[in-house]
Image 1 (tube, rainbow, N blue to C red):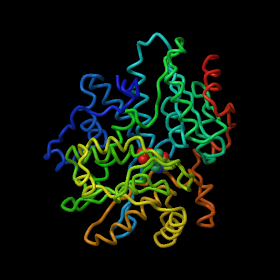
Image 2 (cartoon, rainbow, N blue to C red):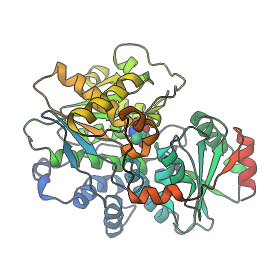
Image 3 (spheres, helix red, strand yellow):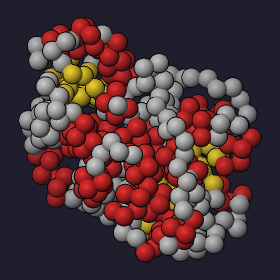
Image 4 (spheres, rainbow, N blue to C red):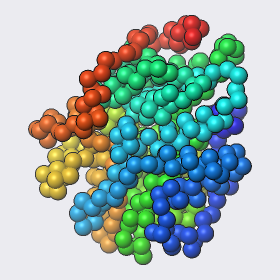
Length: 416
Ligand SMILES: *Cc1c(COP(=O)(O)O)cnc(C)c1O
């Protein structure tokens, strides 16, 4: 139900009734298990009887069938690389899991399902890839014209078949507003079965817990669990990590690493929570002024702020610092960060300076090539483009330009 609806009937976000607790012996033996076995064990309590076990097994196998390595950068910092999936960003895991669940839940629907999704860049590519050729599902992606990277645009405009791209003359916030407006008017489209695939959907959010188990599995010093720094925008990824910790996974501390969009850092450092208009930065996937998933973090801590602040800190990193650290880490360690990972790295480095006995992991959320437009000028070199991406860059973009206006989207849907 929650997967199909996306948003709860009261317009709030879905949240599990209780947080399942993992058997401590299972966690101690984590190195004995495969990636697939871990994913199955972690997600099973949330699925209950909704999906038959054999099918769930198959879904998680397809969801995590690429490597998720932990790579040491120096003595105290390691990178958890989440960019080895088909669209080179961490959103592949959530999108693959959700598309398969939705495909199952709507299998007996008489109407075709239409998935509407607004993207600031990476969601669109991951959702397009996850739903490509899924029977009975049409996907419509809205993206802000001129505000996504070259690779991101190719990933969402070149697949064709059941994937349709709308290039909106406006910002990401405008795209999101158009989608929201259409959902309030869904009754006007009786011929369509509309649903959304944005990051607040539980089927995209919950499987992100897997990463944190894989990080811990590859962490050698199990007696001293890692500090984990997560580049954050809408706070879905970090919130999944915090949920994993609340289920029993040992994590010493979380850092929510933000760019100039500092709603949460400002709040956690003692001020009011006020929503800001998003400003554009080098790490565009984190340009969010009103992070949707932050309420879920408050819920995990049952609104107890002092406890929350002990476990999570947050810092804002500006574009200058992002570029400088990207350049420094490449020069010193030969490791090329993407702009989002650079924010995570620097946030962790700052924290460890004040906590010198600890060590940590930052989440590298995208492959640097995905942002070659930003990265190449910073390091003054061209980056090797993997073959799969080179082939995609040659493909013809197919997108329909539309006005920044819900009426334009309505007109498009009426013709479907
Ligand atoms: C989406 C995204 C983020 C932000 O993740 P949230 O779950 O929205 O906090 C960070 N980095 C990259 C590369 C992304 O695509």
